[in-house]
Image (cartoon, rainbow, N blue to C red):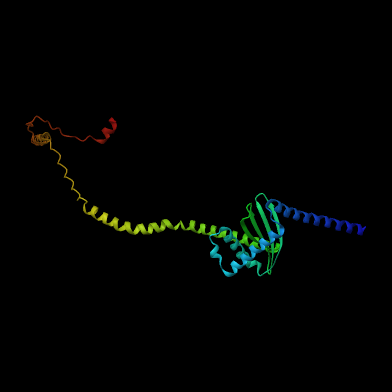
Length: 260
């Protein structure tokens, strides 16, 4: 039973390997049929391009290719990835694929620190369209980079929020600062304006004395007539004005109570 399972497993492995080889052969055949480029010629071309990029970066000649967008971006991609790749040990594993848009050549680079994959793309006229260097990281390194990016992103967000809160809190001091600067200017002006007003205030006008009440002459005549009649009555003579003065007699209290 074990032998049968082992035989079946080996057969499946052979089938998958043959399928992969046939797929690679089909891709190479497709590139050859569409653009007339073979697997060997594509591999030689890719090696020449990679060696040229290494030489340019090693000699520091990047500025000479600054006007060429494709070469300049390829040099920047290789230079940034070279720190993680380390020393290039070998270049192998050329894979060629083609479609209606052009030809793509994948090259595997073995480095002392990390391996990398260089993708060289040619357009339908077999002209360079892009060269990209992708470093192959392990799963742990990718998770570490993801965690680091998350922490940096969250730290940046919280820092910005704290700065915004501090700015909003500082708005409370703006009215006080404005009042402090404007108060010192308004007080001297208020004093200058108050002085002329106090000087221009008119003196109070004294109240006019009340007019004496007009005397009625008839009251004086009556008073004189009454006095004259009283004198005449005391002497027993008639009053010259015809007034009669009667004497007031006191009535006893008992009679007043009885009449009441």
